[in-house]
Amino acid sequence: MHALTCGTCSTGPGSEFRALADGLFACPAGHLLAPQDVDLDGPTVWAVDPSGTLGYVTHPDHALESLGEALADFGDAHESHNPAYAATSSLRSAVDAFGEYAAAFLAGVAPVSIR
Image (cartoon, rainbow, N blue to C red; front, side, top):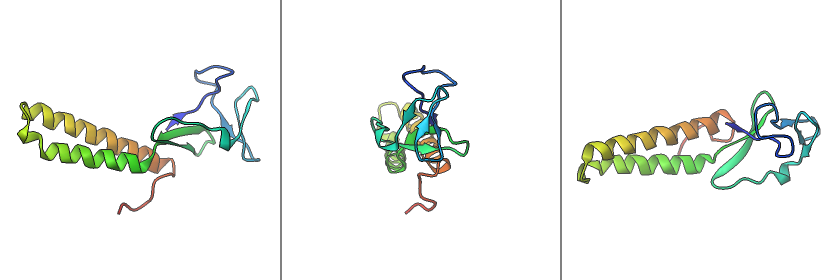
């Protein structure tokens, strides 16, 4: 999970938003962020880790799609001009996609069972 930091304070460590008891998030300096104001780009979703830090992960559906595409590419690697490179590249993509799914699972935003 990648932590979301306060843009007003800094973008470095120590400026991460943490969950408050009232459902809002606050940085160490006290700047507040409401859940409806969390605006992410791309196929990402926000999550809160066990320590209360607000962060984001790749949407689990997108990660599984990427994993499926990488495995399909691996199956077709033998048809490439450079089969060894194509196989290595597709396996690297599959490992990356699995890592993204695992991060979403650990953040609690991925289903326990895969259909």
